[in-house]
Length: 65
Image (tube, rainbow, N blue to C red; front, side, top):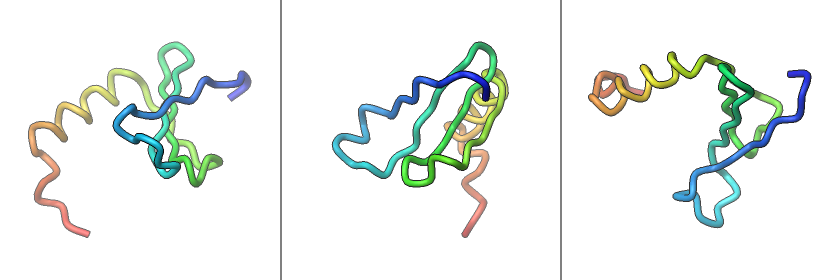
């Protein structure tokens, strides 16, 4: 990532410091956990939207830890 990103967290996180943060630099979306900011996952907006739709539809409910 050659430019500095504007990381944002969900307003649902409240005052908690441990949360997922997200930033975008055009078509790419970057995701990280606030307590491990060096570990960043990068994907496209379309793939992230598809993953969110699948999660909302319960397509991952069968997975266990």
